[in-house]
Image (tube, rainbow, N blue to C red; front, side, top):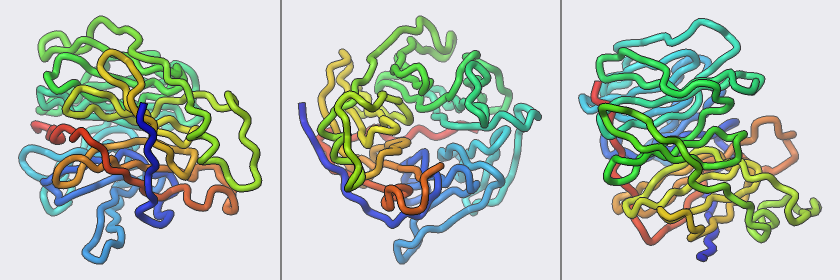
Length: 304
């Protein structure tokens, strides 16, 4: 098993950094400051550009026609290549549920899930938004819908409902959608990596952190990278479920990861400082990165 250490590459620009996504369509990395409602990109002087999309910016992906599809508080918006809103679809009206993470399937549809603001068990749903913006629920009784990504051949979909403490895998096809749900792996926190993310003066007790799989991505070999929120780690699992690599991150609330860079071999990692006092984990909210051996997949674009 390989052990890697991620490097901090930005200041603490975000309160709740999430959803990194590399796309040539917008010239590099985008991510979100979710609860600020901002889509983040790097500016010409390596300062962040912020696009305010409302109360929540949960997930961002490219569109085949240019621009982006963005999951906002209660639905999705489409933008053109200049960032102008061109269409918005609301999926619900209740104010106690918000969007969370998502991803684009091999057929160009957008799978995106929700969560209750109070994290009520079973209150959330995973939706499929078709290229024509028709939508339907595809997985109900979810608590915190998080990362979803597909194998290189498009036949498997990996998914995290964070409080379940496991990564699940589905068979997937354009005709049948998600089928045959089963457990892929139940991550176990690496104590050495968790201790490395512990603040100076704070004592880490082995086995004291629960593995909370958050955002995930799948690389070109079909291995699954998943962020472990609360543990300061990202794990890589081979297609057979074997733990292949552990990345130590210098902030505990690791939220998501994506492979990018010109060769797709830079793992970008978002972190959060949600609910943290100002003097705790000063690097939380920063972006981290680490170079890896296997490239990622080219980011799929929404077909609408």
